[in-house]
Length: 56
Image (cartoon, rainbow, N blue to C red; front, side):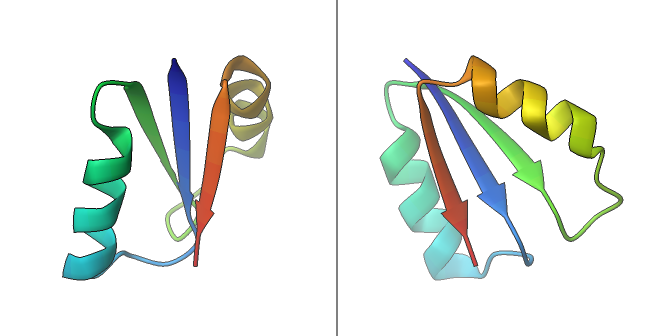
């Protein structure tokens, strides 16, 4: 299962822990919106993923 995590801000320790646990056993990818984001790539990743989680 392809799993995409989108982070709006840099995650703290708790968020990182939760994200890692949710991604266990999955092909996980991460997209950081708080860095210089390539939105065309984000759209590609969303449509290529089975599951998308957006983090604050």
